[in-house]
Amino acid sequence: MRLTSRAVIWAAALLLPAWGAHAAATACPEHFAAGQAPELVNPRLAPGTRALCYQAFALLHSPLTRTALYSAEHLTAERIEAARATPRSGDFHPDPALPPDERAELSDYARSGFDRGHLAPSGDMPDPDAQQESFTLANMVPQAPKLNRGVWEGIESAVRTLAQRRGELYVVTGPVFRGGELATVGHVVVPTYVFKAVLDPRSRSAAAYVAENTENAAWTAISIAQLTRLIGINVFPALTPGGRNATLRLPEPTPHGYAGGQSYPKRSRMP
Image (cartoon, rainbow, N blue to C red):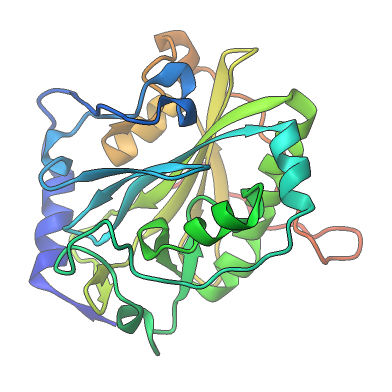
């Protein structure tokens, strides 16, 4: 892991003021609330980005970070049932839809000390083909292993349970790049935090989990308005201003494989 001038330039661009919104066109509106893809409120995020559609999710990829800026899914109770009946299986692979000089490669993650952390989780995928698509490196960010296998898995599990209870949810997941110096693994920029935003279309309420990308990760829940200020992206542009400032009550992370469950540290304010 090392610091690069590209990562420093990227961090500086995120901290500059935004001057307008950049609405992303989408060829797969079914993955987005009201068919509207997230808006890049900070237009400095936009250069070179590519929107990619898959069977069960969509993402916007940045050549500067060689990660997605977000990955979006429409979760339904039926889809969760199908996903739970689908054995986990897939091979990590560079995305053939991206030019080699813009994408992550397997060699970037090799011996890096970071997991290849899914944005749209493989556990959300309703069939083997969709699951294999979720293993594209375009859908990965470098994640601290204890985060990826602990609190983050718990957040993913909690969102699936909530989708079953509510009937459907729209979910947008992505990295948060903060600070003047960002590390890289190979050519891939390491996020300082990761977020998972959740919208209940029936109650028209939403909120987002944010977790530190560290081995001793804490997490918090914030409003969509707070998330927009944090990442420079309005993940749910169809949501009213009131809905962006209100907060959907998100369940505590509930990981699989822990007798009686496990509690994770939570911070009232972060980052």
